[in-house]
Picture (spheres, rainbow, N blue to C red):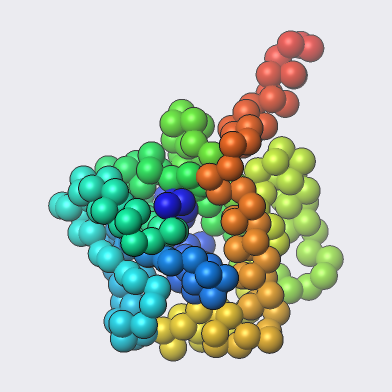
Amino acid sequence: MRIITFVTQKGGTGKSTLATSLAVAAMQAGEKVLAVDLDEQGTLAGWAEIRKGVAPAVARLPKHESARLPELLKKAADSYTLAILDTPGTDSPATHNAMSAADLCLVPLRPTRPDGLAVAPTVQALIQGKRHFAFVLSQCPTTPKNSRAAEMASGLGSLGLLAEPLICQRADYQDAFAAGKGVTEYAEDGKAADEIRQLWLWVDKHAGKQEKPYVESFLAPIKAKAKSA
């Protein structure tokens, strides 16, 4: 069973919304999906209640039970092919347990300077833990030539740190979540649905594969500059 963890120590990035829609897209692609809500806010679990028991399966681990995550995932491996973990927007044992368990960590990030600064502790923890990770640029303006999003995408892409595609700010994401659906169910022919399907294809290609960790790609330019100094 492959494990995908959504992680960032910053609220408002669309982490839970992306997790639910990606879970549905993976299910539609043939995966048997378990989504795990480790956030005290219970956003993903609340979505599951609106969904009323329809797959994908959703489990909730409260803060005081987060140490049970390895046990839960071990048991789930007999029944599921993919687990998607939604973590708190804070530094916590639950967050670190979820990062340690992951084959791939996805870090949602809006193309703004405050988000870029706030995500630093998350990146530091991922690098220290030698985790395989990539950013997901989310809530990007839909204007074709938004310089801030394009500049950030270019920089992260050159480092091998960017999942594809950019996720734009579209009403379909919020409306689908409110209806207890993934965006590929809610508006299957819409642009948001296309974005999530592409994101799933990217994740499916990179998660759990024997390839060079992104952390090495991240550190390489820094090491090169140090040698030339």
